[in-house]
Image (cartoon, rainbow over all chains, first blue to last red; front, top):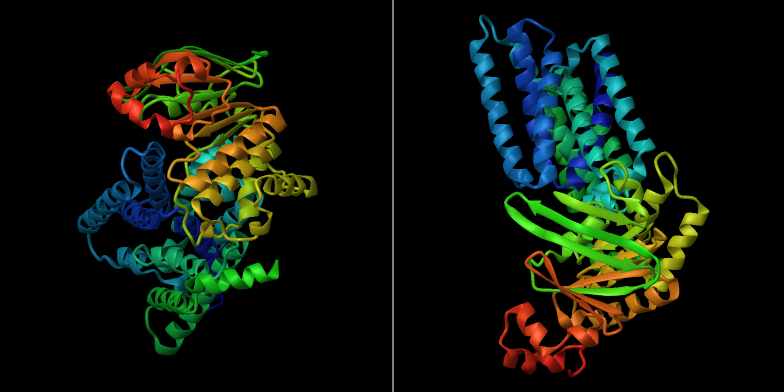
Length: 270
Length: 260
């Protein structure tokens, strides 16, 4: 259980930090495409008899290498290209699942996740990825902030905005891979999107949004684990449902829904 | 014309099969205020992107502020070139305020690993004051009107402390009052800060009537280059916009041009 609590903490921070990019860059399909690429890659790894996480990370990088130039050049709308990649990855995943001989329990574990059986090495991997994600956001916050606001403007003031975009894709791949065993390929996208989307409802400060998203990510993991333990139900599902409920509560009570009132309050302060 | 700060020689740019610039040559001297006009698709925006290093040349040479533009020096050169684009739709929930957006102009100058200090915030606040946006400095950026957004874009550009001031249709989609205010502001900034300014527009109403020089563009070529008095005549406008002379005449009262 200790390992599960730690995994939820680290996975919550890493996934929701990546989620801030996904939400603010209006590319929710990045998370979907990446999580399915990781799932398909992990199944490829299992089929080939290698570590599934190597397969997951490898295929995530391939997808990032496809998405990046497409989004960069604007040849296709990001939604279209990511939608095509998402469906391809889903097809590939089920292909390898069909090709795998014998029991499919390993594959199903990657599909739904099993945070309760996480090992020490899983936690170390999550800790490294979470530290890298948070560390890079901290170090390159101003470049990230400008790129999120408008990539064209970031480029025009001399910032390496294209590199930042590729960095985000790479980090998304690493985060999804590291969280695959805990949350599962099908559910991880929700843990990327929901906490960040919830934080987005509450603040007009990007720094605060990163902090709130990380907080909601950890909270989703811990509350989800608690429900999973109390009712003996799959932890991946309870974590994702919890994050969705947090999002709904934040959306309902979002101060941004009352823009005019907020503006009056804000101006009165000045 | 002072020292040449922009020297474009025979620039060709294409986007896949569409040729945006067909061998364009242009020299701009320090301190000049150049209006670039022409119909949509004439290559005006591409010309600006060639100057700020974002456009990729198929052939030709570009020297900006004494440096030949190449893939390796694009980033460093852009730090000296301020660029204001058309008003863009901004997510009303974007978690950034006006002051933070204006600060983006300092980010390139600061470079990697350095955070904005007191001096940078002072510059940003000074620029916001210059564009009369101090009272809205803490407002979320997505809550501004089109005219206010353009003021912030100009403040962001000036916070960069650029030597070149490039404006790409900065008054497009603004109402008449906001248009007039932005034009006035641009001229004031050009004069007081002694910048070299290139102002692109397809709309003659939006052309600052105080331009020193006008460049006419059509189909990826420069088809005229001279003073506004020389170039903005019924004949040249009729050819530029493919409009019959009587129609141009009819519209002339709306244009900031002198009778020829």
